[in-house]
Length: 274
Image 1 (cartoon, rainbow, N blue to C red):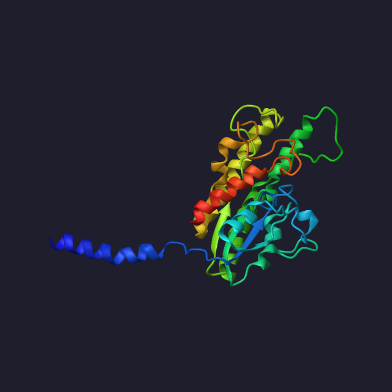
Image 2: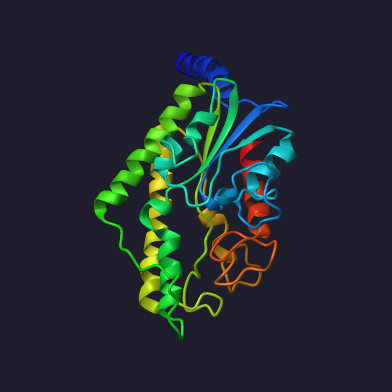
């Protein structure tokens, strides 16, 4: 009986602690900063946001805008197509570091970054060019990322989370990993690349998702495994959320999330934030 009473007393003491550990509810009008590359910026997903750098391609229907509208948040969209982790932490030509958008009043920060550091989409584009019947001078070449580049990518992702926490101690930090843009198995007419390049690109996607999850876990950030959520919605699936080598006007760009993809990301993020 004594042991039972002691156990019940301990549970009573721990219950309030567990409750207080829940993330705070986002208040209407709370400041929300979105950072990342094109997979967050949403180039071609709706009109480009007026007054923003044209090269960043911040679509008005990207997932940050949809989440901000859902929760009635004040969005500061710092995303930019082509950005790397270095561009989040430091300036990029005329663009200031994305991290400078975060301040002490910020209550939510979402981050989708890391793919450009290791040429993830660039390599898929190069693989498409390799299969083209005629050479295209605009095509880039396949570039296998070095181990040092992968390690640097992870280290900078960690630094981003730590900097956000330093600048905005009360903010919820959510890492949103990359939408699935490759078929899980077999060939896909919408993404005609060789079996070898498919295998290599799938391995890169898996490693990128693994690094994102590891950083979130180790640094105490929240994680939206959108790569897993979207796994059954790659190009050539019955209901794709990402584009293959071709994108319709207003529906994103090739090898990127479509409007459906951004809508799905916003819905998944809304569930997590609740």
